[in-house]
Length: 102
Image (cartoon, rainbow, N blue to C red):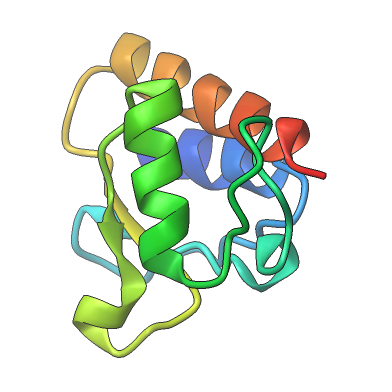
């Protein structure tokens, strides 16, 4: 529970994301509606959740799965089945990535 709550809390602090608390499993599914249409520092427009996931991976070295794979666009899936240290680092990068969008 504490890892889940850590991830939900940190992702909810990222500009443009809204992360509900899941009932079970070991994934969270943040809604990324608030970042759609924004522009990355390199000038790419975030038009889909796939664009967002590619931006996270290419520019911030964070891996996630686009929500479209689960019928949850625009959003993404993050697993919290890892250490708190890794989760804090990943969520911090996501926060920075979202804050860098214009």
